[in-house]
Amino acid sequence: MHRKRALALLLQLLKIKTGQTVTILFKGETVNTPSNIYNFGDYREFLKDRYKQLKETDSLFSFRNFSKQAGFGSPNYLKLVMDGKRNLSADAIGKFAKGLRLDSHETEFFRYMVECNQCESPTKQKVYEAKLMYLRELFKVKTLIPELYDYYHEWYHSAIRETVKKGKVKNEPAAIAKSLVPNISEEEAKKSIELLMTLKFIEVNGEGMLEAKESGGAVDAETAALSQKIHYEQMAELAAQSLYTQGPDTQDFESVTVSLPKEKVAELKIKIQELIQAVAREHSNKPEHAMFQLNVQLFAITQPMSGEKKGAEKAA
Image (cartoon, rainbow, N blue to C red; front, side, top):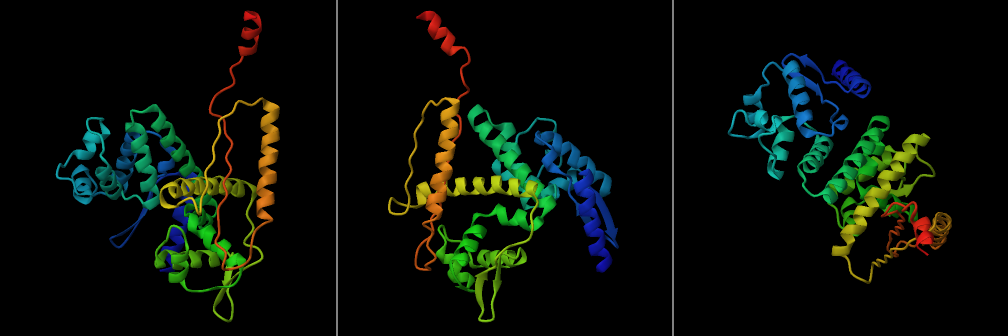
């Protein structure tokens, strides 16, 4: 068992360095390191590469074998999709992921890559491209610190952490799960607590209460920057969900579209930072108070129109 774990760790290191598939047999058992799907932007090219890798490392793998594992009746369905003769439906994407032996995170990336490639709307395609970029960033964190990858992949980890930081909380996953908006399952809350303890963000005291630790493990600047982007993405998605799950008593959305010169943009960014700092100072440590998330986004929706001013002056 120790030999197997050591080899599995070696395979993970080889994956990070080369992005290749490595397979070792243990008396009929296969230990498989998936290919690096995050290097691809075209899902059909990924299918060709993945098929080649599985074929080289598993003598039993074939188009027929894939269809059987994935649950397709046609023995050459994978070949048809690889050659561009078939597209993938939402249901077929999940089956393909199973047949290609992808894990849950790779499956998520594969799904968005298929949607992006098959999408006919340029606007939606840009959204999918942004999601793929986000997942690639997330994968970088996974290769550096796997636990941080899990932490930033789900919004409720930070929510539970902040709840514990307000004061000691009973180590009761079911109650914690129900206190979140939206609710999560008891099992998700239990695993979240275990993760936060692994990261040394929280601990269980002698009375069985959860309490925050002063500091977690050290994180380098690159990982911290990637993690911050991932956190922003998670909170933006949570805000979008709240539009349909909460009412005016617990939420407020304001939006304005304005044209600003470069120097005004810089001034506005400072005002946003000051607002965030001011709100943070109002933070309450009383357990009976609900927690809120304040997001402020500022981003460009057009490019500057160079030469516009000169054209206007000439017309005058």
